[in-house]
Length: 187
Ligand code: GAR
Picture 1 (cartoon, rainbow, N blue to C red):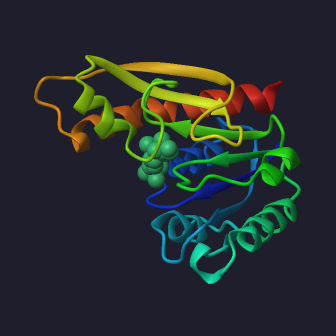
Picture 2 (picture 1 turned 45 degrees about the vertical axis):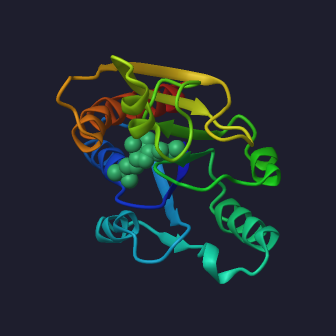
């Protein structure tokens, strides 16, 4: 199984995937790692791990449709079985979803359908929920919508900040993402 991973930032979940592939516990090939902006640590750490990387910089495209087409072309060139959005903070076009129908996997730091969007952890704290968590799902053209594959609950502690809670969620998220990718790879 070949995957392309898309990131917008740190890529700590991606690092867990890289490590699991390297130690032989995750039977897949990371064909490439792509980002929507330059200078992400996600791309930097991927290059350091010897992976192919690419950037389709959103800001380089005057028209949204042109960026959509460029992203699709860049990802499709690697002929991935699955595309993984791991902290990729852009909604992709319907053309992208169609091209990778049922093969575009997203991870989100909340128990969807609660708290979709860019601030899932902050929004959960603001609402006052006592349990949140993470979700791995097949993404459709909406914001963190599409069929749920797996979820892990994480308890919100009274003293939690967005940062402390997100760090605990990410621990669960890494494990869940590796488990889901492993299940897909072995299917
Ligand atoms: C992860 O928690 C991921 O679920 C979240 O961004 C973080 C990326 O962390 N994605 C979203 O909020 C998407 N709506 P990382 O770059 O350290 O892996």
